[in-house]
Length: 480
Image (cartoon, rainbow, N blue to C red; front, side, top):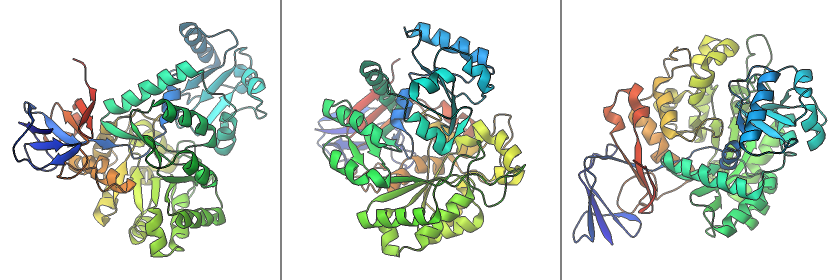
């Protein structure tokens, strides 16, 4: 059936009506099977999640929020309240997310319940003595990067019903944010059985693009064949460094107070990953926060032929600390950049102390990328931040820290931010049929209560998403 949607605003194309037929946008020519009056609402292409971790976000919904905790006693009180509210046994472990302030190890060890503290960045954490015994973890104190990620693999998944309920809520929250596609930004082998079960049960409502490590890419393709479920293997993912707030992002010049961060891959390993992706014709995402890591990745890409680079469609994930020389090189090599501008809001003040005013002020250099014609997207890296693309857009436009300082010079306009969430996100994935409201494209769109382009930038996040459609079918409607 052909449906005409009229009396609306399409700010990215300038139209005031559109048609949907058989899941695609169609010419606005009669006859129509139905006419829908949108009563002046704004219509945008649906957002595509450029980078996040869907399962980790679902798990975060089952964790206590330690953002307000400052001492071991605070954490003890939090987990006691959390355990009582969720009916957990006396010895059941509790993970506290957003735990950016770690107490002395000996004080945390004195708490008898197994406790796992996880920094908001996901790049550091602590396990108390009870948790270390339970999970067989040897190292005490604050763990970072590889040590921490290795330890977290020992933490078992929650029980089936609780996890599936959380996963259902997580998908709904992505729809609430206006997204019709979520990313599993690192599909580890430990996740394979769960995702296989979710696919078999038909539990995936949202499309999921998953990126395993090169070492498990072939097995992931075998377990998740193309077009057999909503989950598809989008390519592969590598990690070259850590995070700037933990001072583990790899830099070319030292942090304030010293240190260059952490390299998690050698130059030879990065080159081999690039060659492996090219041989498989697979997209390659590279987690690179610091300019040292970005330089290493670009150097490896430069050793591939142009045809090989085209096959892997490389994306620098985060690309936060990136000088003009590296932007020039990225433009030459045809590299996509995916920025994490909410870092400015949540850690901008920390970055200013640890990187200095000049480097911190340039973090997520979207305007410099725009001026060079480098395609870029914006992401939230959920569960680090909530799956809210409009927050990413607002942060890229305003570039304001928690204490009200504005990082000037790299801001972009609202239109450019919306294009980064829609058209550019589709290009990052290599989708030729999404990201725009145009004849023949898949009818993925959202209806808003106001036109974001007509609002002052500071009010961008006041836009409310009313309905979300995927292939012409409504997947989310905001309750009154």
